[in-house]
Image (tube, rainbow, N blue to C red; front, side):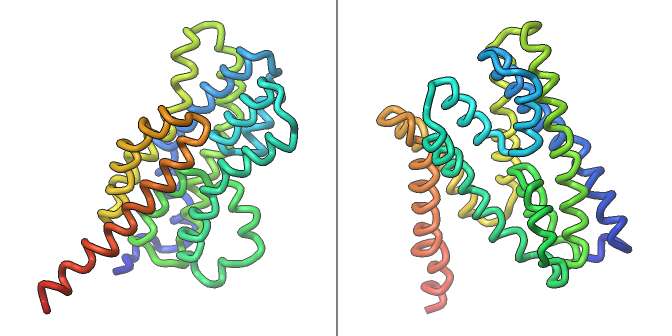
Amino acid sequence: MTLNRFANRREAFWRGIRDALGAPVLVLFAGMIGFGAMGHTHGFDAWTMGLTSLLMFALPGQVVMLEMFISGSSLLAIGFAVTLTSTRFVTMVVTLFPQLHRRDRNPLLYVWVHMLAMTAWAVSMREFPAMAPKYRLNYFIGLALPCWLISPIGTVLGYFVAGWVPVAVTLGLVFINPLFFLLTFTDVKPWVNRMAIGLGCVLGPVFYVFDADSSLLLTGLVAGTLAYFIDRQWLRLQPTEVQG
């Protein structure tokens, strides 16, 4: 059931900003500090690191690109690897943007989609059902804009403070953003989502032992597929079978 949470689009926009100026911004800021520290450790300059966060705004892809540059990989290989890490955005787009009001599904979405990230997607997926469709885009922009703008600032800050704190601490900040996404997504009601997360936690270390390079991709593919089939074949069929 849709709730009338907002009186107008401006109110939805500012509510998105208020929701962002808490855990989402802090978590993303911490992750970008870790990324900036990585760049400093490997000899990249602050401008390059800051522009990477501003123009790419995809922390896993940024980390992959940085590591492959360091290892001397070709531009073609780097582009292919970064593309693979970014395939998750396809799922995010096709699940989030169809929930917008029909009049908001226009070419301007090519601008707003640049601000889409795991954090903004997870929070929006949780909050969208509680608001009218006509307010969802404004809420998303208010939520995603501060996260995007804080990213290059955090990256540059991490670059310059890299020598002040232990390397293990700064690099560990990179993993705060995925952890926040994980914890946020467990709040989504369908059990299939929680099942996929649980299977991923179990299968991830197993696949890493066999092949570290493809372990993340395989974990997501296998865990998500298993959760889907368990949900479709068993969990959703039980009520029907009981009624029969």
